[in-house]
Image (spheres, one colour):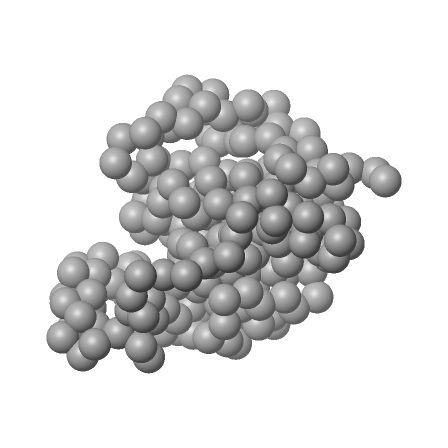
Length: 224
């Protein structure tokens, strides 16, 4: 089986689990060759300060078969960053799959790479993705032809397994799920707006409102 090259994007203040969840799936799948790319080869600080080291810069990155974009606070700055957007658009021209997890979908949409496709993102950003003309589905993973997107943060593992099944087959994906012991039993039924207690949802909305408002202002300028 030919291995497909996955280029996993790094940027400052990315959400670590958006990146590490899919990464832990991909590196166990024999159908993928995984590498990490950013604007420069200098270490990148994710949310919380953990350093991640790119394998390639935008200048020397080879063509990829799969483009992958995580989300995080740092996505906000990238929505108007022409260097990152130009790189993604160029790679997407020859890539077989264009993918993202969480608010990485906002960046794909800002590049025009979700035009005419169904997609998902973190629950708090579904409205923003819809604002950009994307047909939004409130699901853990949405696969629409060669666009595959995951919901918020923990959905990255689900996303990784779905993409593995598409490329390498269900048996490979199921085996990796077993090796990861991915059988979630969360201690609270509070992981989605539909199940969280009203006061918890209110708190979650309040905590994310400043970031939401900042992105909304940026996207309104892009869309209008």
